[in-house]
Image 1: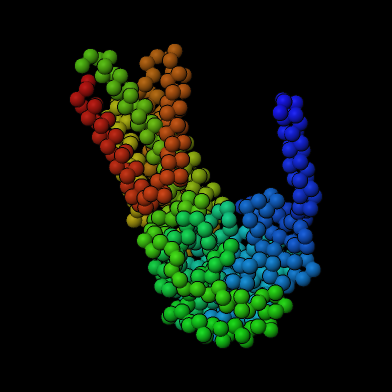
Image 2: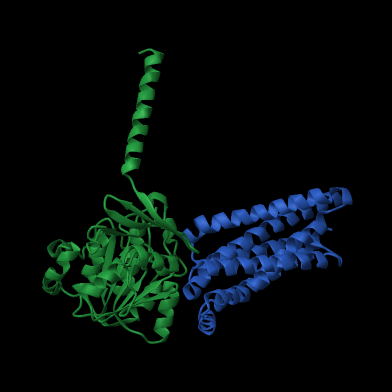
Length: 300
Length: 205
């Protein structure tokens, strides 16, 4: 091959790759909205009938929340199903629910329908997120849903002092690019635990990969003992005060929700399959504490 | 030892102390964020409060350090500044538990609560750390002609030390050690350096 044909081949390769990028770019996302806040830019993108909230341009580092435009009720992300399975199948008729981290609000929105009698308290640090969730993700903060603008840790400490109790606490404050490290320590989880009513349940959306997996597992185990570990691209930890509900009990409750969950595109048998208690982490990994909490450095 | 040799050792110690002081300040500042987070969160307000307190304390420290250098400046006195900065950082350890929690209850506003907490914990040690650099300038400058060059070198070492303290603490130290251990080590190194300075002042004249 002479130099000229080599160059031509290279040029062809280059234009070909550029071409596919452009083509992808066209079918790629369109930005619908951008909201600047104290913390970040809250972005809304649409692509292939899906509308998503992201904190990075083109959703490069993960999506916070998504809805299907044709059918906004359907859960577009797997982790929402996992969080709801943890909430609905572990307790009879929970009435007081605390959610730390709003995102697009798909969980509180679903809970308005699935548990209409429950008081849902949401803590969100960033008012811009709440604003965008209301405007673009049909989140509704009328009673019985309520949003407080606060740091999750500060809210929990205050709630402990006021002697509040919750039947379910959902932790959903992490995103892929940055973890608020003070919300992933043994001390914080102990504070959360003391907010749980007898037989209260904690449902935490966390990380399924990286070195952090081991550390976060030992940290949760040190406070809650055995927990259900629901794993897909995300990981959801489900633990109950006074011991985990046996699988049979969970399956029994799940069946009662089968019809109600259908419009959300949540298939109960596949949700049930995710409840596992297998210990698949390094049990000697150092527990994260307020004194030792390099969660972001471990998440690589 | 010749007088020139003694002077050189004193000068080097001066630079080392300025470098370390920069490291010490930024190390503590970064740990400050972790110490306040359990009670005040890690919102932008908390970082704003911490950085404001450090900047204010440093600026007033510069003024005071320059002023104090007018009265019989010596390496021994410079060492004392380092020692006092280290010792006044020690109360941070007992204050971060109960007392901070009570402060957070008394001042629930996320801005002024964290501002008060940061001032309470970090103002005094940072103020004394700020005194170090201008004091060093006085010890190093031997004539009008070289004052700019000396000051430039000093700013270089102390700010370089700050950069090193920032990156080492945030990228590595917090991954290896507990916050309190890092803080105690910073204090211990300051005390060792101060002791070295006092010793040099006594033995080498």
